[in-house]
Length: 203
Length: 381
Image (cartoon, rainbow over all chains, first blue to last red; front, side):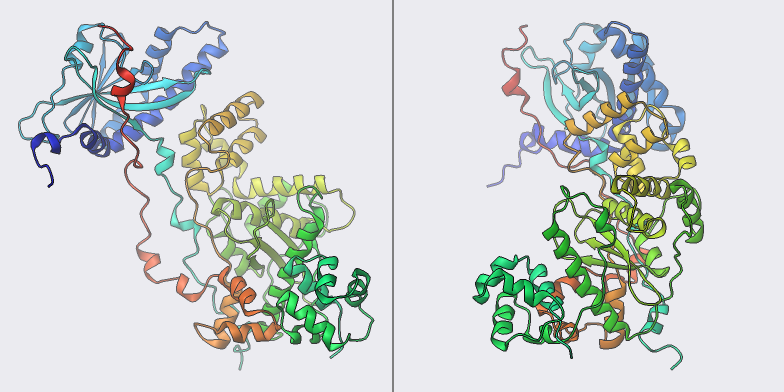
């Protein structure tokens, strides 16, 4: 028998994938923006022969990301973006408030500030439920050893004394969802010149 | 009809047999097969031909129809030995020769309208690509769509072969006889972006190179330069390959220009838009995602049309394979495989012009990570 209890309907896995699908247009844009921002910051560190600083690196990534998510993109996609103290970013999109952080071994960073603690107490009302407060989510990025982007995750955090996340789901690279246009495939036939080669022309 | 030993060689090489293997099947020694394959000898005893027919699966009539059409190795001559061995080259050439013979018989000696012309003198490959775009009526700095059909409409005969040989994508040649027709012969079932690059590369050989004195490395390099400029014009690339180049950026450009991400990286390097170090880094990023061997962003592959168009004009919309096979006296199975590599009338539904398939939306399915299994014990409260 199918379990139709509210808990079953909002199991973490269903919620995670449904949320990711709902937010996909913004997540794809974020992927592009974070990937580009990381490359800019990595180049900056490399060109100036700077010693790697995780704090500075992450803040600069968010600076560039904020620039990337300019008013034109916000208007086109229908999201709002706020710049928070210490280069923080928060986005408002489809009933979700989303922060962008550097991940900590594929998990959200430790709760160290008031803002983070607030974020770790999200609403778990079903997405789009009338009157529900905004869903608080986090997008984290992970770096490879050479400071290139390794992966992005969408996280629903929580703080109940034991665990830090309700769920965590990877954000696929946007390239894996792209395809070349049909304009590369032939939709038109050869013209009647071919007929002439078969002996019909002039007969 | 004068017997030609070349037919025995053709059947053997298409089947992928050595002279020794065929000799064992027929019950003679290798030198006898070598002699039979040489022109100028009388037709062998029927028993021999029957044994050869049995082993190669070609009908007996195939061996009694005279010499096949002349068919040069063309740009296969430029291929290094290590990338394609002699037997593979022979198999590709002889299968293409059979497909070409089928086209010739279907065309019934009517002449194709050939618009592409060889450059009369040596020319810089970049300049040649710019001129060729203009000659084909393409704009100088936008993506080339439907490249195969464009070439076919300009008189290039494109054939596709059911041969799965690693490291073989395409070769090209000018046919014998008058007028000499440009041919490009592709291996079937390659990704669309690879087919487009192969077509451009072979077009360069057709327009710029004579299979004579030039060293293969130089010729191949020139063809690559031509293809790069033809598909990715420098001026457009300087506008679109903006730094920093990311994987998403490359994927978007691949979808727009129909060229692989790896070719785009090499183009950026060739135009000095990125350094060698940046190039290596981008390739490492591709490798880390497993995209060196299987790139994302699928480009639809075109199929050549002319062969089936000719057959449909004679036999109607669904030509019988047996009838086509009887034209060249070849095994129906082989002819079917060749025909299936080409586009038929049904491949152009009228709806395809008005309702193109939309690209996939939303993320690809992936598994929710079992964070709890990893989480316990990592961070103390």
